[in-house]
Amino acid sequence: MSDLPEWLAALLASLGEGRDPDTVAEWTRRVRRELDRLAGRVPFQVVYDWHARLVTSMPDDIDDQDRVIELHRRVSSGDRVGATEWSDTLRPVLREWYRAAYPYAEAWAVAQANARAYATANGYRPDEVVEYAEYYANLSTGANAEAYANANAIANADAIGTALAHADESAYALTYPAALLCARALAEANRAGPVGSAQTLRAVYARLADELVDSLARVAV
Image 1 (tube, rainbow, N blue to C red):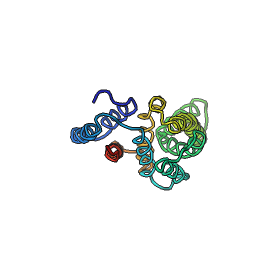
Image 2 (image 1 turned 60 degrees about the horizontal axis):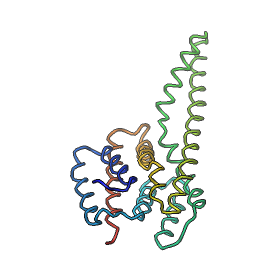
Image 3 (image 1 turned 90 degrees about the vertical axis):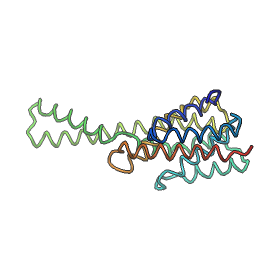
Image 4 (image 1 turned 90 degrees about the horizontal axis):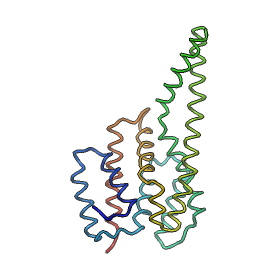
């Protein structure tokens, strides 16, 4: 599958790596069939459809997702949406995705262990060790998760918003869509339990991979 748009090549590689290896061959055949049908010419409308699917397939308890879906509907009907509106609408949704994708449980455990070691080494009483370790872990992990979510949401919303507003393939490729895909998959897998299992994560990747094929299939020739 050479000569693909850079953004699509990156997504296909990531989706293929993320899903169950036993299902990759059949999925790849489906992708090739659609690309052959399109003679390798993949329009930017696939990006819009793909992004809409990323949002609509996420559990619907995340605020502002409906606003993102509405923008995609407007674009599909021929309306133009500016970069600022895209970015402002995407930012709160991406913030929730990245917050959910953050490995909170693992980070909390590391912070708590480090704080226990510090408190023990500095002569804290046993009850003080426990209290200090939990206080520090909650404070530092919460702050780190918020900083991670905010920084990624701001940077990605602005970059993606600009690319979507101008239907710019090169600009979209520079947003590293495979990285956003990873965050999106981790967010859903982590929300399914305290720590997203490998099996759950593969299932999310498999569904998103199938939805990308569906986005390709929606393109008329």
